[in-house]
Image 1 (cartoon, helix red, strand yellow):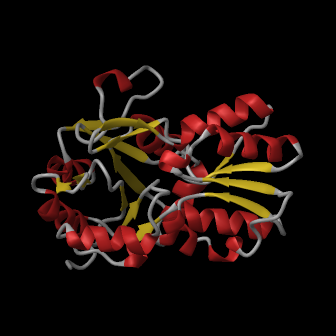
Image 2 (tube, helix red, strand yellow):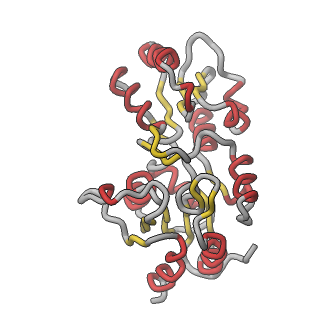
Length: 263
């Protein structure tokens, strides 16, 4: 693994859609990742995945040929733990995949009660059933807070675009009249925590999601670079979302950042 560079900025890098799509790495992504490490003062891989634990994310990246460590990967689960601890919650309902529960182990001890102070909403895949959503809705109507691990509207699976957690969160918000607390992207708190984790004040976010990655980062005061891979769509660029830059893929990012920060 290349050592961190001496640049005055850090890099936040989305994973799925930027480094790989499904089980296929983006062409040139391995080399580009090492170049970015050499350009920056720090690098973190920031993902909104709520279907895999941090350990599983790292293992998958290593299987795909990327040299990464667990310390470099940041997920919404840690933010959810911190939030619930600050609120001193004693009971929660975990609506997350089985694989994510290892990252939420302290909260798992609070789950399973008839009532809950918070509903933790992650990716349930095919388990997003009417029964599951109705159960969460009833808890919210009884006073529970809705804590969404992320708020993406959709993502790209191997078989095409699919609804993501944000779509189901929006349904629960609409039905209950309660606005979700979002701890993953595009929450400004998530981006600020990621930059602080590198011990830096300035960073640039590279992602394939115009809203969660780019608009979220820019609203948090960071630069945002959009890549035309993964879930990228031309119609995602609007007056509300104007990236700092748009490139074809991660391969183009090292040269872009070298120009941006050469002054």
